[in-house]
Image (cartoon, rainbow, N blue to C red; front, top):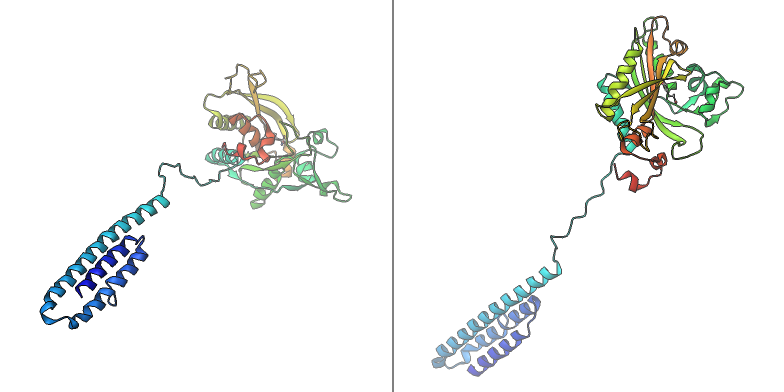
Length: 353
Ligand code: DAH
């Protein structure tokens, strides 16, 4: 019995040396120390040992059991450490690696500029009015004092959708400017009280389309923001004050303005607005073509015919209007040299805003 116990001990210790992982360790444990393990089996045979030897053999068996438990614990600890070390190696995280930033969306530079323009005019009490992109010749031209065959039509080469049969007015086209929205808006406002129409303070942002050669300076689609104020005793001074406020908020309080006489069929008198070049402070540079001035919009006092077409009696009402291109404004503000960037969807361009 003693010999068997000693053999078991050395066999067990030897086997333990080959144990490499926790699975083998568990197997080893049940094989030698488990309820049906080798040691338990041996102890069951204690009855065969002569009574006088039993205490000594029992003590020996206990010592061996403790020795094996201790060896087991030591091995278990070593394996636990090794396995932990291995997972740490395998799942190592380099906390010094730079993170992967989520791709963030952003507003298109045209949208940004449009919103900025809308914000400034909203602060002045102007509402945003949205008009249609697909228009009738009547609204895009005739009601704006541009009759058929008027030379001003040549300035705005048009995309036609439908020739309207024998009625030129019914010809369907893509609007070449946001000005036809003036008529829609005035008619809607006037309809609220035809004898005494309410005052109008609106801006009309939207896409416009022209059948043009695409160049660095002209695109076949672009935004415009139209402005319209109609009421009693509105004067050109109101127009100038409004534009001046807008330009100084958009481009800086030091900006100087120049109103240059011009012609638009739907305004009389008409003007174009120049601001001193913010890049060279008016000294002359490539952006302002060495003139010191940048043209930023057209404007004027609403023509009596246009007021009448909108349902406002030109004897009792006056108004001013203006029109600008947000892409052009954005180009000046951010120093963008080619208008074609706006619709090319090149992320290298778009991500700069
Ligand atoms: N509709 C003109 C254009 O597309 C811009 C414009 C000029 C609008 C003067 C206006 C205005 O309302 O008063 O070129």
